[in-house]
Image (cartoon, rainbow, N blue to C red):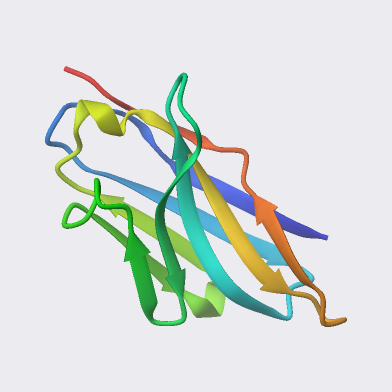
Amino acid sequence: QVQLVESGGGLVQPGGSLRLSCVASGRIFSINAMAWYRQAPGKERELVARITGDSTIYADSVKGRFTISRDNHNNTAFLQMNSLKIEDTAAYYCNVNYRTWYGRVLELWGQGKLVTVSS
């Protein structure tokens, strides 16, 4: 069984910084990609950033402010969020695409961490 444990998030003032972490554990053969999505109240879930190997992609709204990184040895992904704006307020979800020891490719979601940007 595979689990995702997210940490970080919370309340921050506009212009501040936060860091999210996501640790994947369990019966994982390899991880193809790790990503962060977010969902604001009344809006659809959207991709924030994804890292596949050394390749990263970002939503236009966070480019230059957010950085996704991975610790491959510990199956951990980080999302460093700088210059936060009120419109970044949302629940942030970790997503992992991984391969099992039997060769299956599966996807798992974390439970989400709330990020609130407010003065």
